[in-house]
Amino acid sequence: MAPAYCPACGRAQVADARFCSNCGQSFEAAPTAPAAAVDHQAMAQNMLYWQRLEWKLRAGRLLGLAAGILAWWFVVGPAMAGNPIGTFGAFFVLAFLGIWIGGQLVLQAIAKPRQ
Image 1 (cartoon, one colour):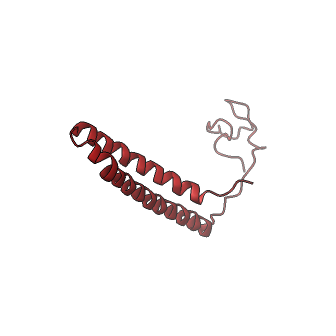
Image 2 (cartoon, rainbow, N blue to C red):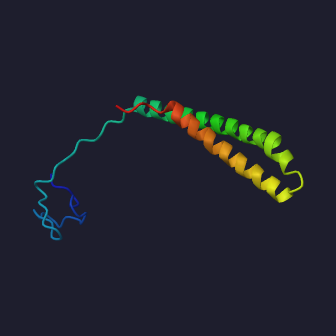
Image 3 (cartoon, rainbow, N blue to C red):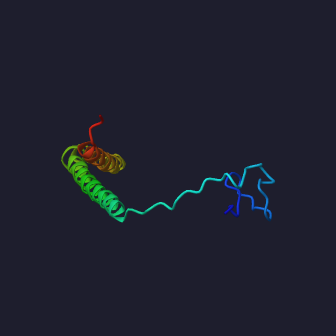
C-alpha cells in the first residue's frame, strides 16, 4: 500500500500516482518502518537517574551556599564592617560561588570515567 504523503518532502499523494509530483520520490519504493516498541522499564530507570541527579545537585549546591555564607560571615564580613555595599557585594559573590562550586563538585563526583 502506498503512503498518503511523500516520505521525502511531505506533499500529499495525488490519486494513484507512482511518483511525487513535487520531488519525484517513488511511492512504491518507500520504506515502511515498524512501530518502535516502548521500553517502559528503561524510561523509568532513566527518569529515576535524572531525579536522583537533581536531588544530589540540590544538596551539593545548598552545602556550597552554606560554605559561602560561612566564609563571608567569619572572614569577609568583619573585614568590611564599615563598607555596607562591599559587604553585600561580597556576600552575594561568595554565595553564588558556593552554589556553583557545590554543583561542580557533585557533577565531578558522580561523573563516569571515560573509556
